[in-house]
Amino acid sequence: MSLHDAYARVTPYELAFRDRARADELVQAVEGEAKGRGGALPDEPEAFLMMASVEAFVRALEGPDAPTGAMFHYGALVYQGFHFTRAGCPLFLLGTHAARFLVEGAPDGEPKAPAPAGYLQLPRHLFWTTGDDETPESVDGVFWTLTTDGVLRALLAMGIRPDRAGLGVVQLPEAPIDEAHAWMGVDARGDGSDFSSSMPGGDIDTLYAFRTAGEVLKLLARFFAYAVSVPLALQAGMAPDASDRDGPQPSSLPFTRVSLHP
Image (tube, rainbow, N blue to C red):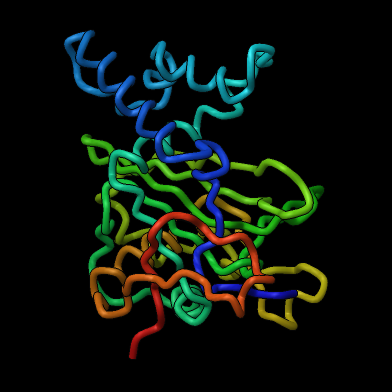
């Protein structure tokens, strides 16, 4: 299993929105529609997805023959992408050593998000989703959005592979951000084995797995706390050089690298 954290890889955001101009157009259309209605932007995904500008954008993703379920399939990703764009596209790449540190224990500090919305990209092939009857999928990362009423909404993105198109997403239950400190120490599985993986060969590279939503929130809260308590661990990322040309497709977005800092 080849782990990779040398640079930020192409993100689900870029796969869905294709270019920043398209995302900016959606933001302008939604803000214009909300202003025309005389109200604020809706925080709830359900209300957001009922907006005419959002429905038009989702249908454009699938083309004129979009199936009935297109809104359900893309809605959560478009919601996160909209807020990600408005926040300035904060992309954080979690390094392997920092990821292992956060799995092993909670850092000092209060878990305050470094941006109102963002994407935390995990080391490639380090975290997986597994289920009793499901094929394991490599997790690419986690989107988050903080609403004006203090609710965190997160979306797990997985299954990004060069040999096929598309990706998978899992929308997590909404959670009050003022409870984030408790997430850092929660026993999400109930048996003390959070993040452990039973994948064949997973012990060789010490791979991890998400089996519950609580584990995703636990890692996200620990990242928030680490970003606050160890600011020197966050540095502007570097684009890949020619020596890494055989690696995964790089992201076109600027990114912040999160390393393990002494």
